[in-house]
Figure 1 (spheres, rainbow, N blue to C red):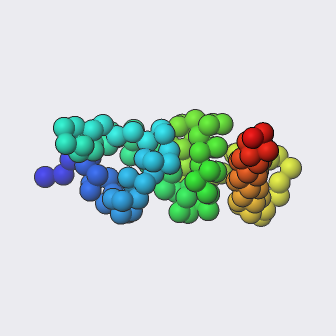
Figure 2: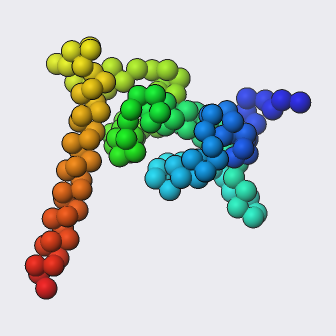
Length: 136
């Protein structure tokens, strides 16, 4: 007997529906604060329909559109969960691209921008560590 669309999913059911291994879902929980399945006694995870919708968006962005983890984190921060759900439903990243980008360059520009922002985050982290060392 199949579960209804509003039924909660176990981690194995969620992983099957998303076509990713269970450990990937656990890993995503550590990287994305907005992924928080319900946990019952013993730590058993249950994913609500809304959780699955967000996970579909995360999967599509990471696996199909070439986003990095930091890129998805930033997209969530800037545009919220509705944007991730829309991605999971097949919405294009074109809406989030700069107005002056050419259509053929949208995907490459987004990946390049995300990589540059990751590098900037890394450089800021290194600067903080150097400042701390120099302050001693």
